[in-house]
Length: 322
Image (cartoon, rainbow, N blue to C red):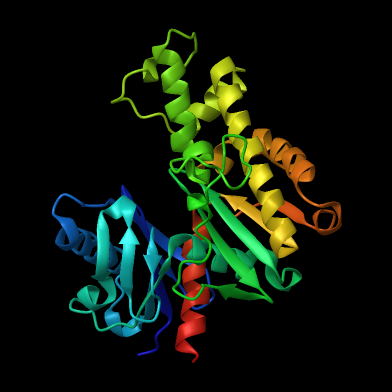
């Protein structure tokens, strides 16, 4: 029986998005289930197994028809061994997820960092051969990155490359902050924006976001986008602050790495890209050296949540063709 399918999975702290992709690189169907973290590693593995079985059952596909399963993990992972060294959003350290999943399936299983996987999808299906040296940045609960040099993904000596969210920066996005708690994602992620807005709400500031004053009420990117469109003062202030910080950090990185392309994605840019991109570009120009800065393209991905799903195809090609 021909192996005409790949299952590509984007694993998150709250949901697991699985997709069946056919031989023509088309997404045949998607399935989404909650991520079960209450029972630790065992619960997580069971969630992933259920997501795979669900997408197979819904499409009446057997293991013999599947060429590979590609899994994107929000953390530092060795794609050769499948060991997750640290995945804070999943509460996991030093866990061989590949070994655990292979107890349930006899299909080649490929593991990659989630933003690296998204970057692979963007490189193959969006920017293509036009990009040689590229940085992909996804902004959401945290901030993650993927690096490409000479057209190939750069994973680093210990598979930690691209973790720009943990770089030390000050409140304006300049590097080398003296505050040990001041990292890129702690000043510019959605989590940071929401934290600062809630602090203002609790001090008595007026806003159409007042219902989110409670710590139990989740303020997501769509809620922020709605407030920005309504010109809410707090939302505009802190989303703008995030955009300026992002642009400033990107300027420093281009001065260091001389990139030709930067691609921005994640829930924050998907919801508010039109508002943020001009501010990102303006701050970028102010912080980058003119010579490397003038040739860089800064764009927003059009693949959205599907970037990591499509990355599963590229990952399968990389590892199965060796």
